[in-house]
Length: 151
Image (tube, rainbow, N blue to C red; front, side, top):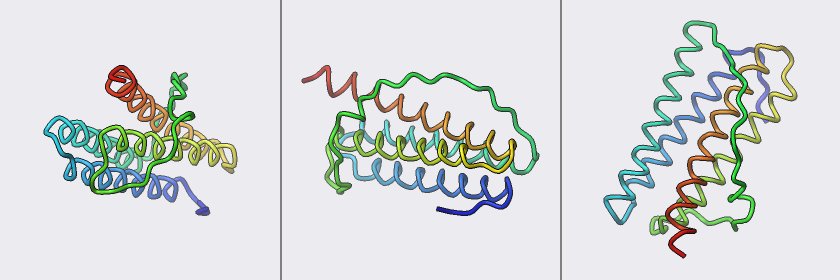
């Protein structure tokens, strides 16, 4: 696990993680078999771009506010087997991978918040964990609406 010596280290790490998410969702969009799937994943990539911009702004301005929020968890990803990333993934498989990635990111930031050495770092990690939790919820809702209800 990375060792963070400052809030800038935390933000650099988070900005890099957001860029990885942008790349991941753009790759899913490129490999999508239908225009609908392409649009969904391109919009997820855009959302990650917005999060990266927000983190960059926080880093530049040197301040941020954390507004603790309770994010609903449908726990769908807790009951779904992992899926390998392949160029020919179905929409269902892509959603499963995305839920898993967001869940892992949430756990990482939550664990880092518990281990943070000061309140500023803790607040940054909590904010990032909340964002990842919202992403996971969005994918769980998508999965519920377009996979579970069709089966």
